Length: 108
Length: 139
Image 1 (cartoon, rainbow over the protein chains, first blue to last red):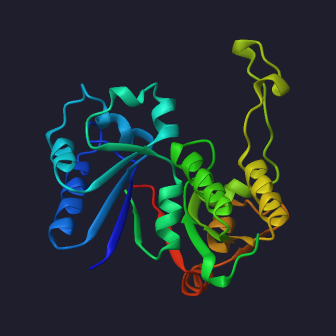
Image 2 (image 1 turned 90 degrees about the vertical axis):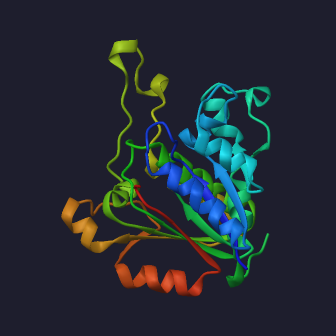
Image 3 (image 1 turned 90 degrees about the horizontal axis):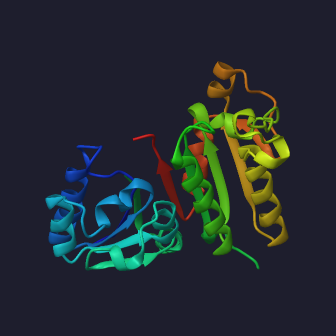
């Protein structure tokens, strides 16, 4: 079993590969790994309650931990109370903590 | 704050300055790593070798009627310098190698102090000697 953290900078509205990235995170979880997705840059866009993305909602409905970068949210004028359920607000510290813990950190 | 070799992180980055939000996130990651007490090693390749170009100059914005000082245009060479100073003040190591092949292609040989020339074997050495490595590709 391994620990994965994906730094998710891409969003499903402009990058078709994003749905596969979400699916990989879920597949790794189903295979018994611990998986965290840290949303950064436009990666936070599907986190808004009114954003429509079946693939992202499926990710949220799994037990993958999803964290949205506070700075990226602020840049896009997205407030915490506008986020979908099961999304934590955090910082890039999560990525550094994972790197220092020896986890597999992957940039998407 | 002291850091051991076991707390050294390598970052490989290939984006040029002034073109992508990835550059901002990359520098934010470096600062966060310093805040966590990690030594940093950067291998800059492709367009990222221009991040440390010493000839970068800030400019004004005539459309908005602002001079260079008022515009306060950020320069990546200054961000690197700032991180170098932050690392030094925290007794941490901050190393930066530009891929020599990529430097020659672009002619960006004038870089700020503390940034040196190397090659792909240095990335291998960096990664082999570090606790962990993050590669930030353009896609």
